Length: 312
Image 1: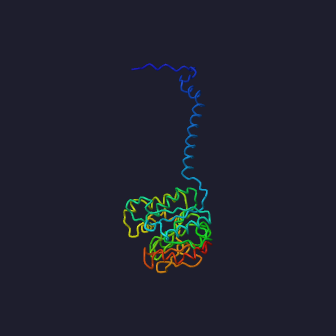
Image 2: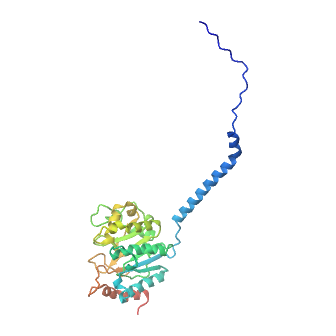
Image 3: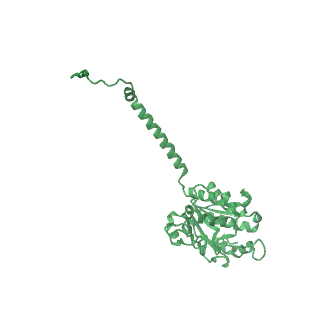
């Protein structure tokens, strides 16, 4: 059977005609408006994200350069001993234009934790009260500043001085802790300076650089979880735990020789005070008797007042 061939195509087809659609015309007519709208959205996103970033990392003027923080147990409140300690802090701060925060442990809600935890809250309080300070120097209530010529920002936190003093690749908890300070960290990276005595890390005198990291560190240290552990030495053992288990904190910490900022009155417990040291700490002093904290402080009362030029 034969089938007819299909008809041949015309050798002169009609010219191509694009499909009629209103979309291209809409895009062309509104392209400028759409672009302007998109640019406006991007600008708003950038503006708000930039503002948020600047608020989260505000610049610190360094005024005052240092805030000296001391917390008293309530049993020492309004005593001749506490008055001497307060005078010591205030005179030193006035000499260098520093701020002070002198508080009582009962000023803070520790939720049943030992009163020694108040030092952590007090340092956080100092950052809130003095948001532009550069450094926080916490000094225990049982201590006296002995050298009024030493400035914390130079004597402890000066970059070149700190670089020389840092104990690198050093056990965090002596003598044989497997966790050691980082060997590659430089002084410019340090935000927290502490010392060690014969028992381990000492929290009687320490310096923290103000900033977002300081807030993070103090909030972490005061976390309810660590307070609930009931460490034998409360906040001191909590600090040792945090430093050993959190590289984020260890990488910002420097351990320096004890006498630089935390010399003890008795060598039995740590490095002994020598004339010229910035401070003396009466470690393990008692509430009464011949070895009371008040008697220990009285032994050095005339000396510190003479060095400050306020002997009377």
